[in-house]
Length: 170
Ligand SMILES: [Zn+2]
Image 1 (cartoon, rainbow, N blue to C red):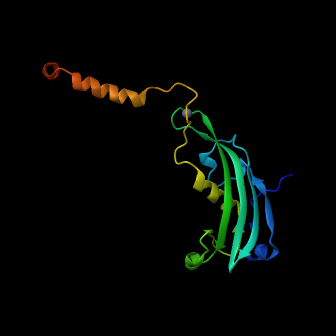
Image 2: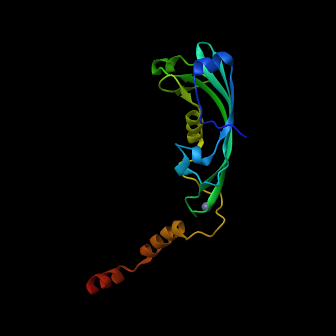
Image 3: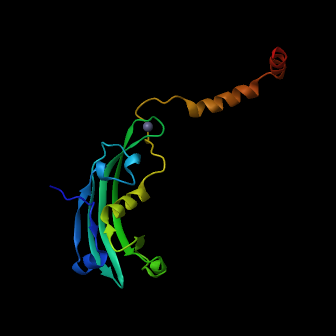
């Protein structure tokens, strides 16, 4: 059975043990992005390793999944594969953000324990499109984008007297 990533850990302890966290998050476990993806999305897989870089606890590894989103244009489902390289400095003191090495991104958490699924979901949020769309939609779309130009052209060609006629009728 695959281990869930919905686990809380002590980052400092994990760093000193160079602990490897490997597992997955299924749709039902998601808290931040559940509403944004389709239930047919694959579980989000991650393999992450705790370690130390300088004084910082760091978390490196990969997060991957084949998410399924809804296309904003045709409302059909669209595949959205993700493969994220993770390189985070895990801190619980905002004042230290400025001290982080250049090639690490800060991840700020509160309290003593770190919920791994929170980190994973936050990383996925960063690569999600604000609007999902097919490159080419599989079904024919209502011609909303072209009809605008069409109407403009028609209006320009309108005979000014016709417009007056209409006004009189009203
Ligand atoms: Zn589409």
